[in-house]
Length: 154
Image (cartoon, rainbow, N blue to C red; front, side):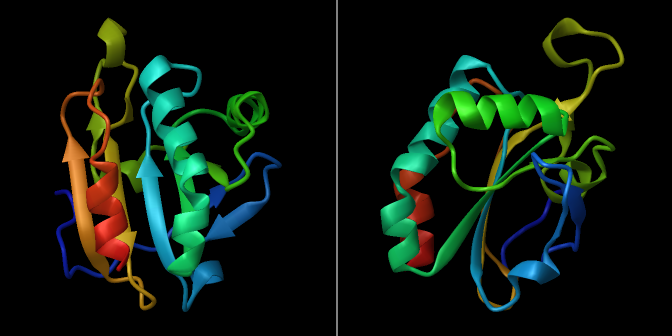
């Protein structure tokens, strides 16, 4: 069942683009924007993560850290980050467990039987990692409402 506002955020430990384990606890006391995306190198995901990249100055004013999460491998995420000059961590949910705990997954994604991908979802967590904003799309072509994300931080 997807997360809703005022729920405690599920903990996680996921590898980043250098295969270093990153945990929710590592960001204790910090606001977080968790951006789940279906797939690196896809047009909508590229536009979304570049929009978050371009808003980092605003997010920093609110003391917020952005984390991108997908089912892609750390290797694909590393190439995607390099190609798009993304400086915030991209995490690999290769087991799909974290995606399922937060927003869910698309089964048989893009018509590929047996392949699942993270649903496009954004969560804003407060300093205590309680969900203050949740947006989940069943349509992987929809971008998140960026202004709502910024308002949720304020």
